[in-house]
Image (cartoon, rainbow, N blue to C red; front, side, top):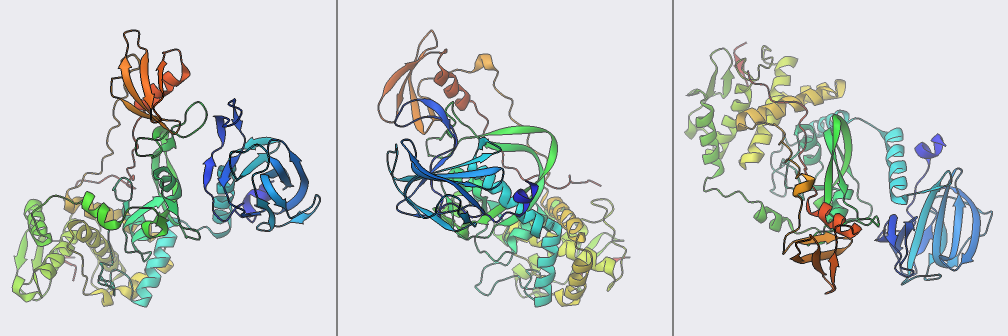
Length: 531
């Protein structure tokens, strides 16, 4: 059994999965009875059906409910495919994953053509989508798993060797910045350094990312064949779809799935797989997202840096030909402004030295005793370079590290020999960015839940429930409510009705909290550092 979970070759039953009815309890659209829908219905139109795993055909038959159907035995697991128009295999045939086995149809009790697909594990029905997803993830992680620090270290080392890293080429050939802070496409929130570097180095110009689950919640669709990118972080809650008494997902007035936050007793390390907006259909244009999330400010990026320097009260000494940080005197040294190509170049140099400045013993207290050319010196430089890139992306000033040639080889070898150094680099880069920008990474306190006795409906409430929008027209003294659904039907619900309490639960369900936990909390606390 374990070998099936870890090693099975998995295929989807159809080329595209467009779910019309999910797994769980529901009111049957034809019989009107409330019962378990022990499978999922997939939209189809004379589509080829494929075996999801290797197995043996155990049944090919017909019944009045699911019409022509077939069942495959996979050894402790069975998969069933119903409402078929044509069956291409015979009982006792051996099939392999991805082999065509049937053609979809509309046989049996249906309201339209679709494929009914179900899975039974040791005789019990389970959600087939969760089953396939779990096998796929287990197989991927068992056969081709590398931890996130290793993945990021390998990618950055390869880019450094090829001269294509964002530390060497701050601007892409197409003119776009090489490093842009990635964000969640739904919430607009960013990711911590290790995840940010991993996502930002995947070659996409769009900074927005979503998991397949988040995309489906919002009505977007991941393009077929898209390759996901892994992220990992500490997680102290889980976001789950809110379901009604039939098991269906509840939608809001915009047609998006409503979700709730389930808190864990202790934080857990969680791994997720994200897709870039360029890999997702139906997602709004990037320009629309940027306009919606545009920060209202009259300051230019250069002015933002000047304001930042003033706020940090860093001592800057102008003169000479070098830009460096004196750790003993706690001074930043920069050439005169007119020695730089333009104001932006000066601001980028200042930000890089502020990154070193953050490591002083009175601030983040990083080891800074290495001499130029030493491994310790190179480690401080890569931390400052990545931290400065993150700050530059936040301030929209960009970044530029002109002395990358002196470090690229050392950095690449260090990452290859010590891939988990990338984890420590990322932690320090995040601290640098937070310290310089003045960000306190303290998780927002969850809003206090509304006590049960204070939960109530109000006239005008609009609540998404069971793929329907209900508007409260009247609230009676006995707490009964008169509602109208989006189809114009009016009903009176009593507190003793199941739907009454479901609507109340949906109204007061907590909103999604999509903060990305940082790997560590910010800590408050040789002479020349930084070239």
